Image (cartoon, rainbow, N blue to C red; front, side, top):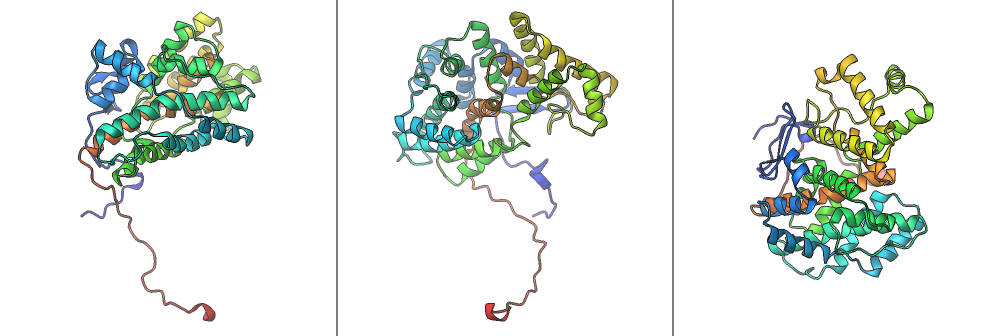
Length: 383
């Protein structure tokens, strides 16, 4: 047994997985062997869920059955709405509300007594969680704005249904397609902090609800989720300053500020997901006639790339650099960006939980003890 310390577990292999492959030097991301570019262009989020959970892309008949089973699970009980209303009245943060409501979803689970080792039951539970999270998020946002929740529809895709429940209006095809693509891009990404958290929890044979709730908690931290919100707030600050984006960035760097959306723990080149979203943001901007957000981001990227040379230092745009602007163009509130990340990534969490459970071993690392070994106990009255 080695005593070498790997702070943050960087570079440590803890399991094998067939779900996603990342080459940080080449800018490659694959889901079960399929390139993220091909999936984003040709698949739906439901197809990707099926792929992650079942190991292969579905046939048309399999996809239709899967979509129907997902859609049938979207509704939540009145008790969930009551809890969300209480949280909204307390001005709770959306991620905290999602964490609480996801844990509470287990109270309406029809297979609550299933054994943790029953992977078929765990898959069905995961399907229910993934189907209900959009309903929870949309309802919370409406309740905190004094609006009644919109009941889910079963004739829309998961992406389109979320936008419908959020706004009360059926989204146009461009918006629905764009949001569906964004969900695909965020569905999985190796053993990131939230995925690993869910796996650690499930390795104890805790249920899927506990593992997904733990994943939400891990994603809520600013070092994992939330960067896309930071990017959008930065872009809005630039807009309010009426400065040229390049000049604003020059000043920000001179002040020692970090530009959000740049750099990644895995990628040393531009995140392939950022490339896809950049193109989609261009399309959205052209469609809406509002191009300033696209122009701001591309101007910043050009400056940091060509004049500062950050990519030469292995610092390049990540997926968050463009996803914030895409969500903003879709009319999604800024503080909902990280919850949407969780909504998408739940599919990956569940996929990894199911995969790890096939050959489960309790995850139990060691810590190097660096404290004293020779303290003398003193009774409390003599201290």
